[in-house]
Length: 455
Image 1 (spheres, rainbow, N blue to C red):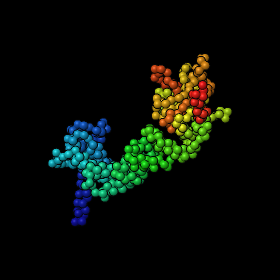
Image 2: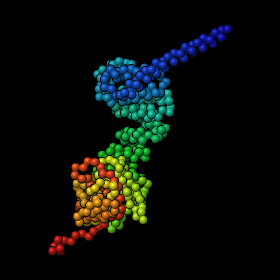
Image 3: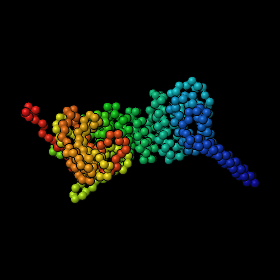
Image 4: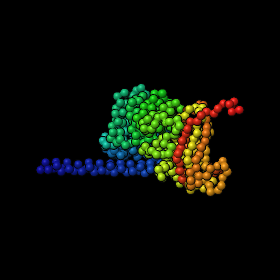
């Protein structure tokens, strides 16, 4: 009888505890839902009362649901986000609500102290989320980021073991969910600033492998450091597409000698000839070959409303560029060619235009790779059904040969060959039509004889 009574008592007590936990979870869920509803309208608020209310809701959610990974994750994201807020009074109010210790004697604390406090709260909250859900790679990764940023904030007092542990956790998170290029880039940036270059390069490699656009971000980060620029070259050394990106980036920085090295490496890795015959410097001038999505030797930028397609008719290969929409006077097709400074060359190409409005001019030109205002030489034809004077060429629905002779500036080791649609004076809308291009060539000419021999 006694045992039966004891059992009934235990069951009643268990039911009361379960009921109490259910009440707590209900209250916590209500607080978390209320916070999320506010955050959906605007994640960042500058009003102290609103921020205080949201802090209180998050504190309630983790207090009533200490085993909820989602509650701890929202708490951590909130603390980490506001660590960088400019309003120190707002940050102090948030800290007071999240910790349940109003002011806590820190009313005169420095901004650095408040930022460190919020980062510490974020790191610990992310850790609680991981404790509740071992597969929460988001919390695992951003918790390590918060801890590393916190260690920078407190300076030399941070334990090296704690920093190493944070990097180990970051790597575990990336192994758990490896398809996150933005996280790899963030990890690489932190490692770079911490002087962990080998780790940074591994992180950056994963980022650019998944999204080539991150190469420019990596380059911007590393460029102004001599060690970083060497690391950038190392990163690009393994792939022709990365070498091409490195070439374009260095060219944009006017680092012509290093850009030329990257250009040669790009061609070597892509299987392109390193030194074309001097009588034919343009590679693949008739578009017979492709490498993946690249037209062997050419760079064609992907632009909305402009499509590029190689076609063949009667053994003749050519590039069709069709413009359907978008304001663009240049067809985003070019090839950079190393030339002899001071030497004379002839640029030739066959061009046809169809579907353009009457009088549209289409040309081929050699320009300075940074700006045609620094150097430009070219020839053009007119898409027209009317008769032209002898100096102009008609290319409406049939090929016209374009040709121009020029002398390379003494200080320039390369020029950009590009196709161009010439805008009319005052024209703002784009032209619609198709340009057909083939037979692009660049030949070295004999220098002009001295003037005294011409007399």
